[in-house]
Amino acid sequence: MIDVYRTIIKVLETNRKKHNPERIDYIVSWEEPDRVKGLDLEATKKRVCELIKTKGLKDKVIANQLGITPQAVNKWRHKGTFFVIENLYVLSGLLGVSVDKLLVPKAVKKCSFNIE
Image (tube, rainbow, N blue to C red; front, side, top):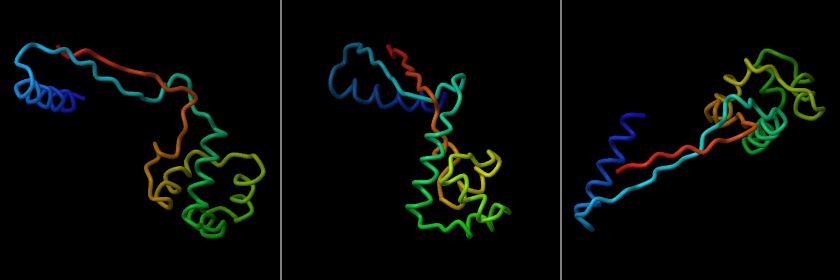
């Protein structure tokens, strides 16, 4: 976070010197998951299933990697049950995305701070 802050300050100082030598205030804002609210399991399942479909992975391939049966994979993909959370690491590797990209939070909080 400190490195990001320093980078932002450097860019702002460079722009300030080019455009206006007076002091300018900036507001930097971003969104991040509200970890207190937890995960939206249904949306997470939907995202994982969409990524599997996009990658063209078959239930048998996923099952072999996870050490479970293809029927178990089919069950959590199509019948409303949810897979074991520990399998997210293997799924993220199969899908080529980070675990954070698989998870869908229930809520997002907005953060901001003022740079003077």
